[in-house]
Length: 333
Image (tube, rainbow, N blue to C red; front, side, top):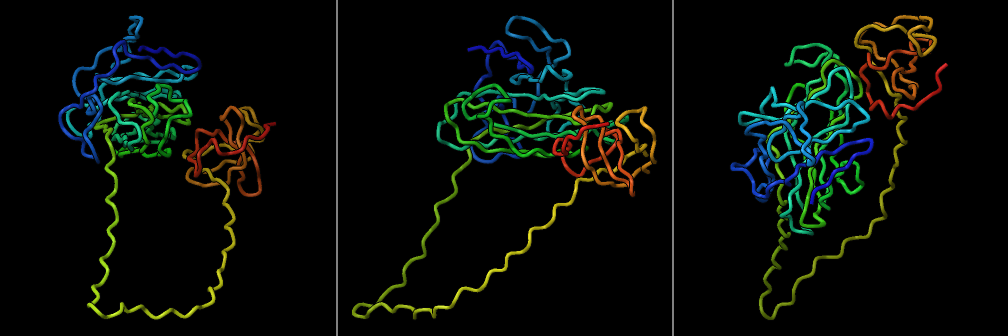
């Protein structure tokens, strides 16, 4: 059955759903049963992606067996063979330039056993930079990545049936993310999701060595054998322990939550209004952390406190101690 879903987000679907066999070789992070994914190492030829209606997307070069998805309310990424490799000779990479995105890849398999627990894991490499050296992220765009499983076999990454790993943020290294879910049908769909907070020059994600397999159940706990009792002798019972009153429990006071902070990467002007035309109140030096009090709804400006002054800074010039979307929206003058 072919599906085509388009609204504010878009999921292109292959005309033929993925084959069920696993590619030769076992991923380095595999745990449990055989790998159910097709082309888990993203090897082979990368060809332009084709919609079920025959439309070909020239900037989508996708490894066989995998499908791209993206939110078409944001910039559509480009997909290509990766510049980085975790294992083997290839990886899948996608990116946007001077823009944010919500995007990733997915694959659906149909040989799961309902009621069994499955694990999806994949190695991810993130490069996000305001400069061009592909080995180093400079002033990154705060890319959040996660992986998910839809245990019903659905192909909508926004569905509430998808079980997601926590978001992670890292740069210039390979890390393996994983998530477990209990199959609700014989079909499972795995997803990779990324979303940068800021539109820097390079927001790139690479994938390699994916794995989807059944998680082996833990061994049943063993009970210690009862001690042998000689014939004609009653079993000895341990002496009853003296009853002691419970020790008083001290409940520590809840710590006071520290306010979110932003560290300015280049120096930035502290402005009276959330506008490049706002009066400059002060200049915050690079590397100085200041409390964040709020942000504008459009995410372009952050309200901070520097010294005894409150004012606005361009949000994308800072590195935040908490996820930017958790900062409360305040009305800007």
